[in-house]
Length: 98
Image (cartoon, rainbow, N blue to C red; front, side, top):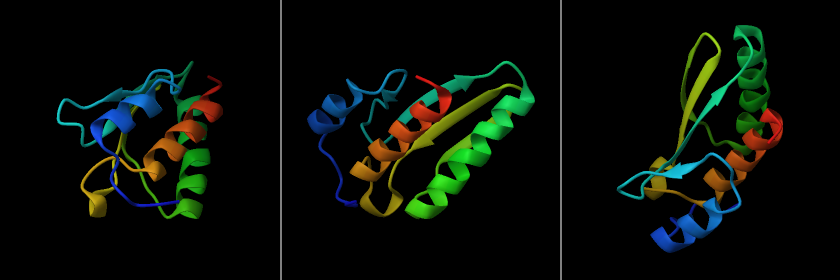
């Protein structure tokens, strides 16, 4: 997977296939909020994503409050959104069930 920054148009095109994700106004990151039935489901999701992220050597910026997980993805060393962010977002959506 490449760490080459996607242009705004490429990032927007990739997001058309990613339900729930939005591109930041500056085009430097993508974000989504996941809401679960309870804390246990949210934590299980985060655990599953953490294992995948570690394998990818690509880690999300995220926070968890009770049953809500807020995620922001970008590739810091590329200065924006890359294919790695899109791939991790796809995995998150699959783990979430959507």
